[in-house]
Amino acid sequence: MTYHFRHMPANKFGIIDTGKANEMAAKIIEDFGLPIHPAMKVKDLSIVYQQMVEIMKAYSRENLKVICFDAPTASLSDSEIEMLFKIIVKLKAEGKIIIYVSHRMDEIQRITDKVAIFKDGHYVDTVKTGVVPEDEMIRMMVGRDLGDIYKDLDRDKEIGDVLLEVKNVSSDYVKENSFVLHKGEVLGFSGLVGAGRTELMRAIIGADAMRTGEVFLEGKSILNRSPHEAMEHGIVLVPEDRKMQGILANLSVSDNINISLLDQNSDKLGFVSREKEAKAAEEGIRNFKIKTPSPDKKIVELSGGNQQKCIVARWISTNPKVLILDEPTKGIDVGAKSEFYQMICQFAKQGLGVILISSELPEVIGLSDRIIVMKSLKIVGEVDGAEATESKLLSLGMIGEVREA
Image 1 (cartoon, rainbow, N blue to C red):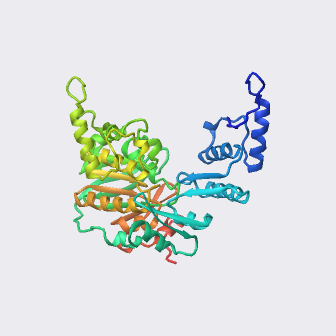
Image 2: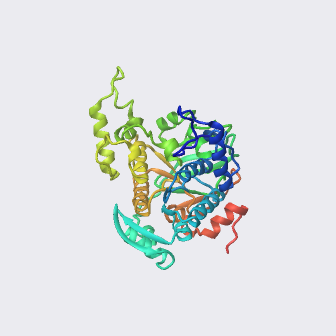
Image 3: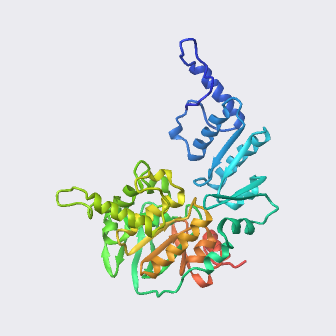
């Protein structure tokens, strides 16, 4: 494990005293109360401990006064978030100024003293935490009540025949699951973390090997041995982990949109048409309102919401029949969420079958026509969207049966 210190222990020739450096690192690790060792490789640590190393690296600097956390909990579990918050409380107690950027209102209410609110890149106001209600802060960010986002959605559509049928699908990670998806339907998937929602979708698209079961698309049996085969059949997945599995960080917005169109944009000799790529990129940017100064801008330099729009634009450009969205609004602000909700409804209205995996209960209830609940790697129940409540979904996800509060 390597730590950066402003004054690393070194001799007059500039050679670092590794033993002394490890002692200094061990002292900081002890101060933070973490079960790691200076000799451990950072790549072998969990995400939360990697973040802790970054915090300790900053902490080791002399005259440290301000630490900024930019959406640090996006990939953390509840227990890991608790660990991070303890560290933040420690830093705050030592007089450090903490700037905490987050879209999660519960976190903002819990650990901040004041909240600076921005909308569309512009400063709106600064309010005291606990004085201004959450609804009011959301209204300042979005321009309306969050509840109105679901009320204002265009849900005028027709749900058609069965489009996708999954029968007794198992993999190394899920057990014998069956469900159907109709044309024009938004089918929600709910459940606790680890319930197997993502793993079931990975088996369907061939990212994980199917051990048992069949998949039917428009009544015909298909076998997806890879995500590429699934794409050719018309089934695409927008993954949960945008940074690791979604974007190609070193490539441009245009390249990220066009990566799924290489066959269509190439001639018989394999030469890619830059003209076709430019047209596809322009259409994606325009249709999905991607905020970027140029198609050549690196995607990693865009906001999380605009990165997600690029990924959706990529897969919609393939003209899919089934669109699987795994936590599509994770880590994006409430304003961008509103755009995604309208987008999802529009996809369904165009006849796509949409599978929506979401851990946010208001989201999955507000958008879905039906909701399937998973528990312990199996589907345990189904709730009609019009009759869904948070208590129904939670009781199914936690105990496997509906018990209304």
